[in-house]
Structures are given as C-alpha cells and as structure tokens.
Image (cartoon, rainbow, N blue to C red; front, side, top):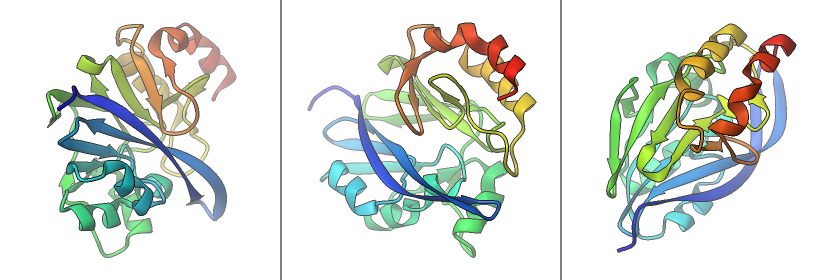
Amino acid sequence: MTAARIEHLVTSGVFTLDGGSWEVDNNVWIVGDDTEVVVVDAAHDADAILAEVGGRRVVAVVSTHGHDDHIDAAPAVAARTGAPVLLHPDDLVLWERRHPGTAPDGELRDGQRLAVADVELTVLHTPGHSPGAVCLHAPALGAVLSGDTLFRGGPGATGRSFSDFPTIIASLRDRLLTLPPETAVLTGHGPSTTVGREAPHLEEWIARGH
C-alpha cells in the first residue's frame, strides 16, 4: 500500500443557475491511498470518476458546495459505491434544485474531521460563493481543496444568487489565507496555486470588487 495522496481528474459538463447555462470543466479530487479514498466534488461523469477510483473503497463523496456542476454525479457515484454524500446544510437549497425530492446522506460542519487512509481532512466552512461552501484542509498532504472559494488570481464568483462578496472576503481573510504559505490550493476549476501566491493580493481583490 502506498502513502496517501491526492489524485486529479477533470470532467466536463454544464453549470446552470439563475436561468443561465455555461459549459465548464471541473476538477475532481480523489484523496486516499491504494485501499480507500474520498471523492471531492463528483462532477458530471460518474463513469470517469469510478474508473479513476478503481477497486478502492469510497469512504465518502464530499461536495464543497451545492452548485449543480459540483454535485450532479454525486448520487450516481454514491449509489454505485455505497458511500455517503456529504454537504453543508446551508447549501441544501441548491442541492434541491438539482436533485429535487432527495437529500445528501450526511452533513459537513466547520471543524469536522474526515479520516481517509492515514490522513485527516478538516472541514473549513467558507461561505461567500454559496452559503454552505466549504474547503478541506489536509495538512499532512500540504494542501487545501478550495472548491470555488479561492482560485489562482482571486476569490470565487459572487455575482449570482446565494452569493456575497464581503462574505467570501471574510472567509478568505480569516480561514484560507491564514494557512501556511506553502499550502497548495487545489481549486474547483482551473490551475492550482498556493496560499503564499494569493495572500498578498487580498486588498487588490477587495478594491476591484471581485
């Protein structure tokens, strides 16, 4: 058995909100070892995700937030693996838009720790992009999975329903940009970055308003 690691898969599909639709590429992160994994943001393509998982046990399917491009394949991955889908309860309103009449299997709470392989993922509630947005800090792996809260070059979008710019700035200032500067930031879309690369630019983001 090899040591715990974070694997990366890109899936493509459609994000819909507020009457609009956009083609998007999503980062799916798989955290674990050769025996068991956590799937973070089961986006678009359950077959591709399960092919990446292979024969390993899925401990949980974790959704960093409830936007449909991050949760659309979650029920299918859960059904085929027996793993629970976990979501912060503040994003249930978004979940229900994509999967009406259903609910996730469990909740994510700030400070909660998820164990997989020989590491722990600590849940950081980072609202702003959505009310129940979370990030997952894996200090043993030197990384934080930031969902759509932090990207290379700035915060996640806050121009649509259920989002708020001052709230995401507070989340960044208080929760993410205080992590060690060498921490890898593994994002929900696009390239990764580091805390140290992004932290000096917070005031610029505030000034530009996005």
